[in-house]
Length: 384
Image (cartoon, rainbow, N blue to C red):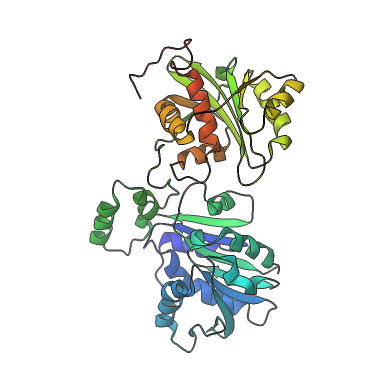
Protein backbone atom coordinates (compact mmCIF):
# COMPACT_ATOMS: atom_id res chain seq x y z
CA UNK A 1 0.00 0.00 0.00
CA UNK A 2 1.46 3.36 -1.04
CA UNK A 3 1.47 5.86 1.81
CA UNK A 4 2.14 9.56 2.01
CA UNK A 5 4.82 10.60 4.52
CA UNK A 6 2.08 11.92 6.82
CA UNK A 7 0.16 8.62 6.68
CA UNK A 8 3.31 6.64 7.40
CA UNK A 9 3.98 8.84 10.42
CA UNK A 10 0.46 8.16 11.71
CA UNK A 11 0.93 4.41 11.54
CA UNK A 12 4.19 4.70 13.48
CA UNK A 13 2.82 6.98 16.20
CA UNK A 14 -0.89 6.10 16.67
CA UNK A 15 -0.36 4.09 19.83
CA UNK A 16 -2.02 6.62 22.15
CA UNK A 17 -5.41 6.57 23.86
CA UNK A 18 -6.61 9.33 21.51
CA UNK A 19 -5.37 9.52 17.91
CA UNK A 20 -6.53 12.32 15.60
CA UNK A 21 -6.01 13.44 12.03
CA UNK A 22 -7.41 16.89 11.30
CA UNK A 23 -7.12 19.25 8.42
CA UNK A 24 -7.73 19.80 4.75
CA UNK A 25 -10.29 18.02 2.63
CA UNK A 26 -8.90 15.31 0.31
CA UNK A 27 -5.60 15.22 2.22
CA UNK A 28 -5.63 11.45 2.84
CA UNK A 29 -6.93 11.45 6.42
CA UNK A 30 -9.86 9.04 6.12
CA UNK A 31 -8.40 6.85 3.35
CA UNK A 32 -5.73 5.50 5.70
CA UNK A 33 -8.40 4.62 8.26
CA UNK A 34 -10.76 2.59 6.11
CA UNK A 35 -7.88 1.02 4.19
CA UNK A 36 -5.81 -0.05 7.19
CA UNK A 37 -6.39 1.46 10.65
CA UNK A 38 -9.98 0.35 11.32
CA UNK A 39 -9.49 -3.30 10.21
CA UNK A 40 -6.26 -3.52 12.22
CA UNK A 41 -7.77 -2.07 15.41
CA UNK A 42 -10.82 -4.36 15.23
CA UNK A 43 -8.85 -7.56 14.54
CA UNK A 44 -6.38 -6.80 17.36
CA UNK A 45 -9.29 -6.71 19.84
CA UNK A 46 -11.37 -9.67 18.65
CA UNK A 47 -12.44 -11.67 21.69
CA UNK A 48 -11.41 -9.03 24.23
CA UNK A 49 -14.02 -7.59 26.62
CA UNK A 50 -15.74 -4.39 25.50
CA UNK A 51 -17.77 -3.04 22.60
CA UNK A 52 -16.65 -1.49 19.32
CA UNK A 53 -18.23 1.67 17.92
CA UNK A 54 -18.10 3.71 14.74
CA UNK A 55 -19.50 7.18 15.41
CA UNK A 56 -20.26 9.87 12.86
CA UNK A 57 -22.57 12.85 12.57
CA UNK A 58 -25.33 10.56 11.26
CA UNK A 59 -25.59 6.94 10.17
CA UNK A 60 -25.83 8.19 6.59
CA UNK A 61 -22.46 9.97 6.83
CA UNK A 62 -20.89 6.85 8.38
CA UNK A 63 -22.11 4.81 5.41
CA UNK A 64 -20.93 7.37 2.86
CA UNK A 65 -17.57 8.32 4.41
CA UNK A 66 -16.43 5.05 5.99
CA UNK A 67 -18.39 1.89 5.24
CA UNK A 68 -19.00 2.29 1.50
CA UNK A 69 -15.36 3.00 0.55
CA UNK A 70 -14.19 0.26 2.93
CA UNK A 71 -16.66 -2.17 1.37
CA UNK A 72 -15.24 -1.46 -2.09
CA UNK A 73 -11.86 -2.68 -0.86
CA UNK A 74 -12.82 -5.63 1.34
CA UNK A 75 -16.23 -6.73 0.05
CA UNK A 76 -19.64 -7.36 1.61
CA UNK A 77 -18.49 -10.41 3.57
CA UNK A 78 -16.12 -8.37 5.73
CA UNK A 79 -17.92 -5.01 5.65
CA UNK A 80 -21.65 -5.33 6.15
CA UNK A 81 -24.54 -2.86 6.16
CA UNK A 82 -26.02 -1.05 9.15
CA UNK A 83 -29.02 -3.03 10.40
CA UNK A 84 -32.16 -1.87 12.19
CA UNK A 85 -30.49 -2.36 15.58
CA UNK A 86 -27.68 0.05 14.59
CA UNK A 87 -25.03 -2.65 14.29
CA UNK A 88 -22.84 -3.67 11.37
CA UNK A 89 -20.55 -6.64 10.87
CA UNK A 90 -16.97 -5.47 10.41
CA UNK A 91 -14.17 -8.02 10.02
CA UNK A 92 -15.91 -10.58 12.21
CA UNK A 93 -16.96 -8.14 14.93
CA UNK A 94 -20.41 -6.80 15.76
CA UNK A 95 -19.92 -3.03 15.71
CA UNK A 96 -22.33 -0.28 16.76
CA UNK A 97 -22.71 2.49 14.14
CA UNK A 98 -24.33 5.57 15.63
CA UNK A 99 -24.87 9.24 14.83
CA UNK A 100 -23.08 11.48 17.33
CA UNK A 101 -24.69 14.84 16.64
CA UNK A 102 -26.88 14.57 19.76
CA UNK A 103 -26.49 12.72 23.06
CA UNK A 104 -29.88 11.05 22.62
CA UNK A 105 -28.58 9.25 19.53
CA UNK A 106 -25.82 7.38 21.38
CA UNK A 107 -27.68 5.94 24.36
CA UNK A 108 -25.89 2.61 23.77
CA UNK A 109 -22.69 4.27 25.03
CA UNK A 110 -24.17 4.66 28.50
CA UNK A 111 -22.89 1.89 30.72
CA UNK A 112 -20.83 0.38 27.90
CA UNK A 113 -17.17 -0.54 28.09
CA UNK A 114 -15.61 0.59 24.81
CA UNK A 115 -12.54 -1.25 23.58
CA UNK A 116 -12.33 0.67 20.29
CA UNK A 117 -14.10 3.62 18.73
CA UNK A 118 -13.62 5.21 15.35
CA UNK A 119 -14.89 8.75 14.94
CA UNK A 120 -15.76 10.46 11.64
CA UNK A 121 -16.20 14.27 11.39
CA UNK A 122 -15.59 14.62 15.13
CA UNK A 123 -15.68 18.44 15.14
CA UNK A 124 -19.35 18.23 14.07
CA UNK A 125 -20.36 16.03 17.02
CA UNK A 126 -22.15 17.23 20.09
CA UNK A 127 -19.64 17.96 22.89
CA UNK A 128 -21.73 16.00 25.38
CA UNK A 129 -21.36 12.89 23.20
CA UNK A 130 -17.58 13.21 23.23
CA UNK A 131 -17.55 13.83 26.99
CA UNK A 132 -19.58 10.65 27.52
CA UNK A 133 -17.18 8.66 25.33
CA UNK A 134 -14.21 9.71 27.49
CA UNK A 135 -15.56 7.76 30.45
CA UNK A 136 -16.30 4.64 28.39
CA UNK A 137 -12.75 3.97 27.11
CA UNK A 138 -12.09 2.07 30.32
CA UNK A 139 -9.89 -0.87 29.25
CA UNK A 140 -6.10 -0.80 29.22
CA UNK A 141 -6.27 -1.47 25.46
CA UNK A 142 -9.12 0.99 24.74
CA UNK A 143 -8.34 3.59 22.09
CA UNK A 144 -9.90 6.04 19.67
CA UNK A 145 -9.08 7.09 16.11
CA UNK A 146 -10.78 10.16 14.68
CA UNK A 147 -10.75 12.58 11.79
CA UNK A 148 -12.20 16.07 11.38
CA UNK A 149 -12.11 19.32 9.43
CA UNK A 150 -11.08 22.25 11.66
CA UNK A 151 -13.50 24.94 12.79
CA UNK A 152 -13.14 27.98 15.10
CA UNK A 153 -10.03 28.18 17.32
CA UNK A 154 -12.20 28.04 20.45
CA UNK A 155 -14.07 24.91 19.38
CA UNK A 156 -14.39 22.35 22.18
CA UNK A 157 -12.37 19.79 20.20
CA UNK A 158 -9.47 22.24 19.73
CA UNK A 159 -9.44 22.86 23.49
CA UNK A 160 -9.29 19.09 24.09
CA UNK A 161 -6.43 18.66 21.61
CA UNK A 162 -4.50 21.38 23.46
CA UNK A 163 -4.95 19.58 26.80
CA UNK A 164 -2.50 17.21 28.48
CA UNK A 165 -4.50 14.06 27.67
CA UNK A 166 -2.76 11.10 25.99
CA UNK A 167 -3.19 12.40 22.43
CA UNK A 168 -1.42 11.97 19.10
CA UNK A 169 -2.60 14.64 16.67
CA UNK A 170 -1.64 15.39 13.08
CA UNK A 171 -2.61 18.46 11.07
CA UNK A 172 -2.96 17.86 7.31
CA UNK A 173 -2.81 20.38 4.49
CA UNK A 174 -3.93 19.50 0.98
CA UNK A 175 -0.27 19.45 -0.09
CA UNK A 176 0.32 16.51 2.27
CA UNK A 177 -1.35 14.28 -0.35
CA UNK A 178 1.05 13.97 -3.31
CA UNK A 179 -1.30 11.54 -5.09
CA UNK A 180 -3.83 14.26 -5.96
CA UNK A 181 -3.94 15.74 -9.45
CA UNK A 182 -2.02 19.01 -9.69
CA UNK A 183 -4.88 20.47 -11.69
CA UNK A 184 -7.42 19.53 -9.01
CA UNK A 185 -5.29 21.04 -6.23
CA UNK A 186 -4.66 24.23 -8.19
CA UNK A 187 -8.34 24.73 -9.00
CA UNK A 188 -9.47 23.93 -5.44
CA UNK A 189 -7.06 26.50 -4.05
CA UNK A 190 -8.45 29.11 -6.45
CA UNK A 191 -12.04 28.29 -5.47
CA UNK A 192 -11.37 28.73 -1.74
CA UNK A 193 -8.94 31.65 -2.12
CA UNK A 194 -9.77 34.71 -0.02
CA UNK A 195 -12.16 32.89 2.34
CA UNK A 196 -11.82 31.36 5.79
CA UNK A 197 -12.40 28.01 4.07
CA UNK A 198 -8.95 28.33 2.48
CA UNK A 199 -7.35 28.17 5.92
CA UNK A 200 -9.58 25.28 6.98
CA UNK A 201 -9.94 23.14 3.84
CA UNK A 202 -6.62 23.89 2.11
CA UNK A 203 -4.16 24.63 4.92
CA UNK A 204 -5.96 22.52 7.51
CA UNK A 205 -5.87 25.23 10.18
CA UNK A 206 -8.32 26.12 12.92
CA UNK A 207 -9.63 29.45 11.63
CA UNK A 208 -12.23 31.96 12.72
CA UNK A 209 -15.56 31.82 10.92
CA UNK A 210 -16.78 34.24 8.25
CA UNK A 211 -17.29 37.74 9.59
CA UNK A 212 -14.36 37.57 12.01
CA UNK A 213 -13.18 41.04 12.99
CA UNK A 214 -9.61 40.07 13.86
CA UNK A 215 -7.52 38.38 11.18
CA UNK A 216 -3.91 39.31 12.02
CA UNK A 217 -2.38 37.32 14.88
CA UNK A 218 -0.87 39.70 17.47
CA UNK A 219 2.78 40.25 18.34
CA UNK A 220 4.29 39.63 21.79
CA UNK A 221 6.91 41.04 24.16
CA UNK A 222 8.70 39.49 27.14
CA UNK A 223 9.17 42.84 28.91
CA UNK A 224 6.60 43.03 31.72
CA UNK A 225 7.79 46.51 32.72
CA UNK A 226 6.05 47.90 29.64
CA UNK A 227 2.76 47.44 31.52
CA UNK A 228 3.91 49.05 34.79
CA UNK A 229 1.64 51.90 35.94
CA UNK A 230 -1.08 50.82 33.55
CA UNK A 231 -4.70 49.93 34.32
CA UNK A 232 -6.72 46.72 34.58
CA UNK A 233 -10.22 45.49 33.74
CA UNK A 234 -12.19 42.52 35.07
CA UNK A 235 -15.09 40.97 33.16
CA UNK A 236 -16.76 38.76 35.76
CA UNK A 237 -18.69 35.52 35.22
CA UNK A 238 -21.20 34.24 37.75
CA UNK A 239 -21.76 30.73 36.44
CA UNK A 240 -22.84 29.08 33.20
CA UNK A 241 -20.58 28.95 30.16
CA UNK A 242 -19.17 32.48 30.48
CA UNK A 243 -15.58 33.13 31.53
CA UNK A 244 -14.05 35.50 34.04
CA UNK A 245 -11.45 37.63 32.28
CA UNK A 246 -8.66 39.92 33.48
CA UNK A 247 -7.02 42.44 31.15
CA UNK A 248 -4.02 44.56 32.16
CA UNK A 249 -2.73 47.23 29.81
CA UNK A 250 -0.75 50.42 29.36
CA UNK A 251 -0.70 52.84 26.46
CA UNK A 252 2.62 54.26 25.28
CA UNK A 253 2.25 56.55 22.28
CA UNK A 254 0.62 54.62 19.45
CA UNK A 255 0.95 51.23 21.19
CA UNK A 256 -1.13 49.47 23.83
CA UNK A 257 0.76 46.81 25.77
CA UNK A 258 -1.71 44.22 27.00
CA UNK A 259 -1.89 41.06 29.12
CA UNK A 260 -4.89 38.76 29.46
CA UNK A 261 -6.13 35.96 31.69
CA UNK A 262 -9.24 33.90 30.87
CA UNK A 263 -10.73 31.23 33.13
CA UNK A 264 -14.09 29.51 32.79
CA UNK A 265 -14.96 29.82 36.45
CA UNK A 266 -17.06 31.89 38.86
CA UNK A 267 -15.39 35.18 39.71
CA UNK A 268 -15.46 34.32 43.44
CA UNK A 269 -12.79 31.67 42.86
CA UNK A 270 -10.54 33.99 40.83
CA UNK A 271 -10.54 37.41 42.49
CA UNK A 272 -7.50 36.65 44.65
CA UNK A 273 -5.51 35.39 41.66
CA UNK A 274 -6.55 38.29 39.43
CA UNK A 275 -5.75 40.78 42.20
CA UNK A 276 -2.23 39.33 42.54
CA UNK A 277 -1.72 39.59 38.77
CA UNK A 278 -2.63 43.29 38.74
CA UNK A 279 -0.15 43.89 41.56
CA UNK A 280 2.57 41.91 39.79
CA UNK A 281 2.14 44.11 36.73
CA UNK A 282 1.53 47.27 38.86
CA UNK A 283 -1.76 48.03 37.12
CA UNK A 284 -4.34 50.16 38.93
CA UNK A 285 -7.17 51.08 39.10
CA UNK A 286 -9.18 47.96 38.17
CA UNK A 287 -12.15 48.83 35.96
CA UNK A 288 -15.31 46.78 36.48
CA UNK A 289 -18.89 47.09 35.24
CA UNK A 290 -21.38 47.22 38.11
CA UNK A 291 -24.55 46.57 36.06
CA UNK A 292 -24.67 42.80 36.65
CA UNK A 293 -23.47 42.47 40.25
CA UNK A 294 -24.52 45.78 41.83
CA UNK A 295 -20.91 46.52 42.72
CA UNK A 296 -20.03 43.17 44.37
CA UNK A 297 -16.68 42.77 42.62
CA UNK A 298 -15.75 46.36 43.40
CA UNK A 299 -16.48 45.86 47.11
CA UNK A 300 -14.40 42.67 47.19
CA UNK A 301 -11.48 44.32 45.43
CA UNK A 302 -11.59 47.24 47.84
CA UNK A 303 -11.66 44.81 50.76
CA UNK A 304 -8.46 43.20 49.40
CA UNK A 305 -6.74 46.58 49.22
CA UNK A 306 -7.15 47.18 45.49
CA UNK A 307 -8.51 50.31 43.84
CA UNK A 308 -11.67 49.53 41.84
CA UNK A 309 -13.15 51.94 39.31
CA UNK A 310 -16.79 51.05 38.72
CA UNK A 311 -18.86 52.13 35.73
CA UNK A 312 -22.31 51.53 34.25
CA UNK A 313 -22.21 50.00 30.77
CA UNK A 314 -24.58 51.49 28.20
CA UNK A 315 -22.85 50.63 24.92
CA UNK A 316 -23.82 47.68 22.72
CA UNK A 317 -21.15 45.02 23.17
CA UNK A 318 -20.62 44.22 19.49
CA UNK A 319 -20.44 47.91 18.62
CA UNK A 320 -17.89 48.47 21.39
CA UNK A 321 -15.68 45.58 20.22
CA UNK A 322 -16.03 46.46 16.54
CA UNK A 323 -15.25 50.14 17.24
CA UNK A 324 -12.50 50.20 19.86
CA UNK A 325 -10.77 46.82 19.87
CA UNK A 326 -10.81 46.57 16.09
CA UNK A 327 -9.46 50.10 15.77
CA UNK A 328 -6.51 49.41 18.08
CA UNK A 329 -5.89 45.75 17.22
CA UNK A 330 -2.93 46.35 14.93
CA UNK A 331 -1.29 48.49 17.62
CA UNK A 332 -1.63 46.04 20.53
CA UNK A 333 1.41 44.09 21.73
CA UNK A 334 0.66 41.27 24.18
CA UNK A 335 2.89 40.27 27.07
CA UNK A 336 4.14 36.69 26.82
CA UNK A 337 2.22 34.48 29.21
CA UNK A 338 -1.16 35.82 28.10
CA UNK A 339 -3.59 32.88 28.13
CA UNK A 340 -3.88 31.30 24.71
CA UNK A 341 -7.62 30.96 25.30
CA UNK A 342 -7.79 34.76 25.73
CA UNK A 343 -6.20 35.36 22.32
CA UNK A 344 -8.18 32.55 20.66
CA UNK A 345 -11.48 33.98 21.86
CA UNK A 346 -10.64 37.34 20.29
CA UNK A 347 -9.50 35.74 17.04
CA UNK A 348 -12.73 33.72 16.82
CA UNK A 349 -15.02 36.64 17.56
CA UNK A 350 -17.76 37.78 15.22
CA UNK A 351 -21.26 39.15 15.69
CA UNK A 352 -22.68 35.66 16.20
CA UNK A 353 -19.90 34.41 18.50
CA UNK A 354 -21.03 32.31 21.45
CA UNK A 355 -18.29 33.69 23.73
CA UNK A 356 -17.14 37.31 23.93
CA UNK A 357 -15.67 37.89 27.41
CA UNK A 358 -12.05 38.43 26.33
CA UNK A 359 -12.81 40.76 23.39
CA UNK A 360 -15.27 42.69 25.55
CA UNK A 361 -12.69 43.24 28.30
CA UNK A 362 -9.98 44.21 25.81
CA UNK A 363 -12.40 46.62 24.10
CA UNK A 364 -13.18 48.31 27.43
CA UNK A 365 -9.46 48.90 27.94
CA UNK A 366 -9.09 50.34 24.42
CA UNK A 367 -12.08 52.61 24.97
CA UNK A 368 -10.52 53.91 28.18
CA UNK A 369 -7.31 54.80 26.32
CA UNK A 370 -9.12 56.27 23.30
CA UNK A 371 -9.15 60.08 23.00
CA UNK A 372 -12.95 60.23 22.93
CA UNK A 373 -12.98 59.02 26.53
CA UNK A 374 -9.72 60.35 27.95
CA UNK A 375 -8.25 63.74 27.13
CA UNK A 376 -4.90 62.45 28.37
CA UNK A 377 -4.32 60.76 25.04
CA UNK A 378 -3.98 62.05 21.49
CA UNK A 379 -5.05 59.51 18.89
CA UNK A 380 -2.60 58.59 16.13
CA UNK A 381 -5.54 57.39 14.01
CA UNK A 382 -7.61 59.42 11.66
CA UNK A 383 -11.07 57.99 12.35
CA UNK A 384 -12.75 54.70 12.96
